[in-house]
Length: 144
Length: 410
Image (tube, rainbow over all chains, first blue to last red):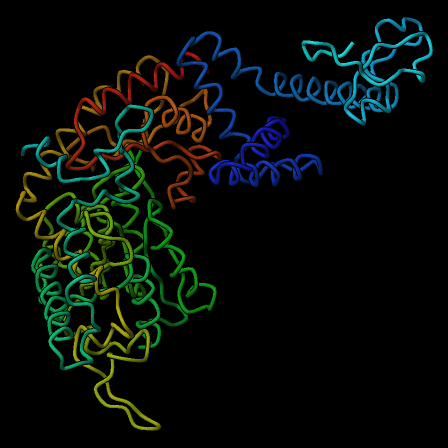
């Protein structure tokens, strides 16, 4: 399942580089085939596997060999970790948008309210996070 | 032969990838091109870019003269006259030209057979399959001995009075065997059959004389002998070529055209319709000059030297159970090719790893000889092939890196 990670990586790199764009396209073809339970027919997954494992082998043959033999399992593990971390990141972004950084049980932790997060303001909050006032600019420019 | 001096003529060999040079061991697929060939082609495009045989202005005269001169030099290189030397796109087109033209001539028919070998390239199998599908000939295959040389007894059994054509490769691009083409030609002619030779892997590596071989037709490719891609050659006996109908119809292959009829141009132009790859032909002429300056005996000797060394070092790997070789293992019986199975790795995996680890270019897969190679391994095999600019050190690097990769991944 290296294709999925490759798609993410090369998809971003492809914004800046034509070479990586070609890889991104190949990765996309490969992902599409794999998620429809078909074999990747461009050998992209094989190319990526050998590129990565040979690179590791050059530094440490034993580790390279381990990576080669368990590549599919490692790819799946990384893919699952990537998806899980994307989900957690999405939850975090949602929480910032909805709740700001305010924890109702611990109002002193509040740095941003949802509205002020949207407006780019910061303030210190009391118990009622909705009543946060506009920033007071101190002598050194820090909010207070 | 000064290999270092020769290597300096090849711009690609000066290239560095990740700080390391390229080790090009895929010459059976295509060879690298020396500066002299590139300059000759560039001269056409910068000094006398014109079509041939069509204008009377000086640029067209220059282009035509260079084109015709290339025919002379290439023909002489293999012992043929310019009239016998037809420029095509490659060996594949040469063999297809033969198939279509001989078919049109009525050489084949129900009950006739065509004999090839099991080691043939697709270009010397698939065109003849077309005739078999049409019911115009039966295609017979001569087998191999256990040492991957041609089984001559099997070949003799297959050739009989119904045989219209025998077509074999001079040197194999897979198992590397060099076939006894003179002997095969005699057998073919004794049975009244035409004798065709695919010389794509022979002409670049050894002196070839089509008259001495006794071939009725001899095909080879420019790009495997330092020339550009897109240019190949078909040499044929003049009396046979004169009787054969054209393959393609159109410009330059005609002498006179009326509304409903046409007459044909003289040889070789009867078989060179349309605007050809002029730069390619000029480049091929330059490639032939380059090889002749070095001397084909020297090229051949260097190839044998590399083959002996490759068989030694790869043989040691085979002895340690790392790989399995598929070739006669005798430099006198084979060309400069070693085809091998990586045993614990798929062929593409090893080829990719060699490229990634040390910029070593080899080929992997079926090598355009699927009937043969798939019988050895359904995933294909690896192949390293050498030429005049390769060195023993490069072969050592191949063996060392292969062992390192197989040690880590196998």
